[in-house]
Amino acid sequence: DTGVSQDPRHKITKRGQNVTFRCDPISEHNRLYWYRQTLGQGPEFLTYFQNEAQLEKSRLLSDRFSAERPKGSFSTLEIQRTEQGDSAMYLCASSKGTGNNQPQHFGDGTRLSIL
Amino acid sequence: EDQVTQSPEALRLQEGESSSLNCSYTVSGLRGLFWYRQDPGKGPEFLFTLYSAGEEKEKERLKATLTKKESFLHITAPKPEDSATYLCAPSRTGANNLFFGTGTRLTVIP
Image (tube, rainbow over all chains, first blue to last red; front, side, top):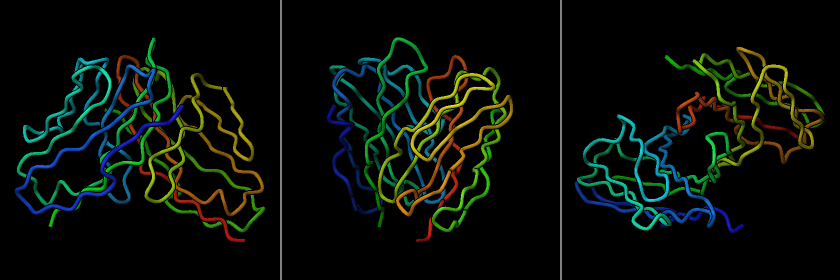
């Protein structure tokens, strides 16, 4: 069990640029989640995949955000035309899943800073 | 509307001084309540899942309990390495996501 891996760990970019983050879940986990966390807050749900299918999206996920999980393994989260308010920690989690009560295991996140 | 409130926001304890953290929740159809620990700059680390009122789980110096409206995380004789932010997250039946509180930031002083 190598854990959930996220890349990069830090990203600094100028407002208006596009950014892409990658998440590699725990290998046997078929469920994958993206969350966003700002300072002093708990993680907020963005989107959920079961295998390659994106089954749920939060209203926080504006049309500038897109997530994919093309082969049901790793996932990418892209933010287009970044804004100051996008500065946050982006967390990926995975779980194995025959039911919804399996714990989600988190990576250490990608910290995004918008200049 | 689902709500979760954690208290206190911050807690400073002397090493060995036991205490409890509170998580109050309003969730229609609770599927489970999850506790996580988060160190600065890291992702949340899973601690416990509780499913029904009256359930208790223990791990080293931590014990989590659940009622119909609250969950408590009891910390017995804490050590400095227990310093972290503790997050609770109820999950609703039929929902895939966790709904996190804002956490309790625990500092244990040697």
